[in-house]
Structures are given as structure tokens and as C-alpha cells.
Image (tube, rainbow, N blue to C red; front, side, top):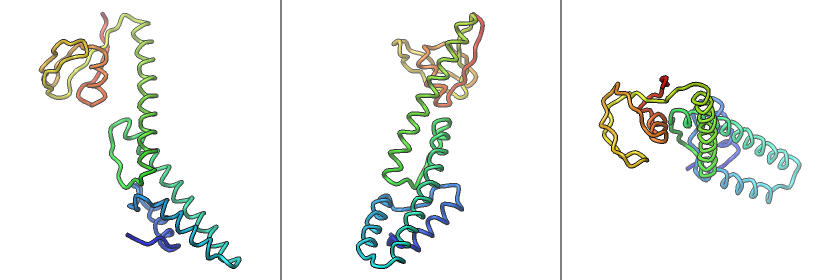
Length: 177
């Protein structure tokens, strides 16, 4: 593990700027930076020391901002298609998980609202077509469904259809009743 230093922070900043992925940093990076700044402040005696501390803060803020933007982008991709992300600190992982949960909840709410509008305006029924073979399972209504082959069409309880679509096992479509 690298010791936190001004040079190390500049190296991390440059790596973050030049990579679309998150740079590998210690999982307790922000705690280490906090200790580093506290130590620098105890030793600060001259004006140049204060300038260095402000520069350290600016670099860390830039690192934070770049990583935050990347984490938000990865959270959107994760909520849509399950993209995994690596090299998160402890705090960033907590932030990432909360953002993904919010995006998924919002997405589900909007999609359900559209489904209600579509199903309410016309006499349509939602069905799914399987994108792959899938074993039999017990639905939320307690009935056994399946097994299914790729291309099979099914009418299932709404919750089961939504889960299968979310997992990429099936696609939804509408038919007139």
C-alpha cells in the first residue's frame, strides 16, 4: 500500500482523469487522507505550508468529484443492465448501493405507471416471451409454471413477469384481450 503523500495524490488524480474506470485506491483512502491532512496541519508553520494544505484539499476534492461522477454513471448502468463496478472505497460502495436502489425504485415506479396507463386505456394484456430455456418455478400465486423453452410465450402473475424481464430471462409485450 502506498503512503499518502502529495505526489501520490497527484498520481491518483491523473489516473482518475485518464481512465473511464475507477482507479484502485485503498478502501480507507479518505480516512488516510484525513490523517495525512491533520498531520500536515500540525506541522504547518509557514505560509507555504498553508498553500500546500489548500492544494492537497483541491486535489482530493477533484479526485472525489471525478470518482463521484464515475460512480453515478456506473450506478445507472448497474440499474439498467447489472454492470459490476470495482475499486470502490467503503464509503463509495455504500453510496453506490444507495444510488442503485434509488434508480431501480424510480425506474420501477415509472414503468409501472406507464403499464397502468397502457393497460387502462386499451384492452391490452401483458405477456412475456422467454429469451432462454428456463426451469419450472412456483409463482407468487402458488401455482407451478414451466418449464419453458426459448421462444415460449407465457401469461404469468405480474410480479413474476417483472422479475423475469428484470433478470433478462424474458421480454414483455402486449396483446389485445
